[in-house]
Amino acid sequence: RARRRREGRGVRKTPNNPQRTMASPVARAPSLGARSLGSRRVDRSSRLRRRPIHGHAPSSSRRRSLAVAAEGKKVVFVGGTGRVGSSAAAALLRQEPGVALVLAGRTESSFAAAVERHPSLRSTSCAFAACDCSDPASLAAVIAGADLVVHSAGPFQGGGDGCAVLDAAIDQGVPYLDVCDDAEYAKACKSKSKAAATAGVPCVTTGGIYPGVSNLMAAEMIEQNRASSEGSEGGANEVEYVLYNYFCAGSGGVGDTILATSYMLCGEDVVCWDKGERVVTRPATQRKVVDFGKKCGKREVFLYNLPETASARETWNAETVKARFGTSPGLWNGAMALMANLVPKETLLNKDVASKLATFTAPIVRAVDAVVGERTAMRVDVKLKGGALAGSIYNHPRLSEAVGDATAAFCAAMLRGETDPGVWYPEEAGAVKDRARLLEAAAVGCDNYEMNKAAWMLESKPINLGFGIYIEL
Image 1 (cartoon, rainbow, N blue to C red):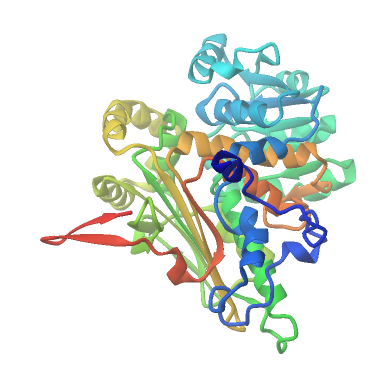
Image 2: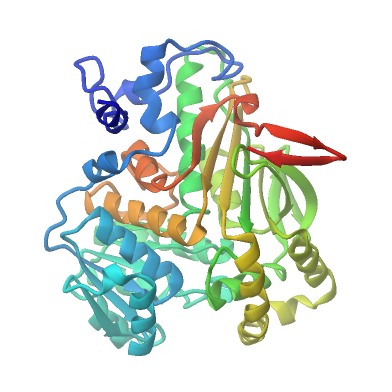
């Protein structure tokens, strides 16, 4: 009986609890007052109904129920033999067992390595295809006939592939998703929205974990805060700030490509907004200590030039938007700051230099990873001008799994037909119709996932062991 009770936790299927959709008022938070969504009590039944969106990660049985019929649908992962692409492919195969996968990369040896990392890809549902992003004919041949193409062949910094995969997808009429983490590349993709809309092709850029899921967390909170503030005087529902904070222990178990991306970010000036003014500053600056809640605790983070800053400003005209990132041990944060201050920008933004530096430092990074693990955490805080504010936390023990689950959740939403024609940032209305469902799928595996709470409800509970030593529970 106890086991059945545990497995049965989740949404209560009653006539008063219809399926959550973006069109359903039930998907929004009840009116709790303009000051804080966590400042008043919520009745027990309301809390239970909201749990899939605002509580813990879903159970394995609930995870299975998120799957949709994708029998016979073909998804091509360009860069699918890399660590991000293969993780996303394996996660999608778990979510959508009937889907057919094509992992496109340069060599079969890289495909063999991907299968070694993810044995579930050793399946008749998964195949390898040779692909060169610099060759339009090669791209066209791989993408032809697909129901979705997922672009994870970074780094996207320094122009990446010049949006070659997106162009091929639009030409072929194939829906497109990328895991871009570069502001300029995302902006270039967005500039092709009219062409995609004219061709009737749904596209989402920056659709991974952060950016990606983090954008949706902000969008969900803003919508629910606005709903709770209905009837307020003009301007109360305008966005005052959106603050993105990220943490990852070590390198997060990523490959050399992501290491190269990190080094290239040290060469990009940070563009952010502070009280309505556009601010340009150096990367790895403006240190801040952020509480990422239970399982992670307080961590130092620093400003970097990330695409969700620009997209939040464009989507909501938020007065203040900043994105910070930090890692552990703190020595790495110091090394990144030194690199940003001492190495010329031109050197850091050179792809060949960044790639060689990543290859050189990889053994050291891997050795440290073995000690610190690969925990990742996100904290997103929003505030409306009327005073409504809320925060959310996403905490996962393994970045390599979290990025796969997050990207696969975007894939599943697009396969369900939830994306309008055009090129969208994740937080825009045309990107995902059912944000709550995507967030629930992306949070599978989290050991601390809280949505739309007051700041004090998100804080970790440190225990003082004496002599200035604390542990976080």
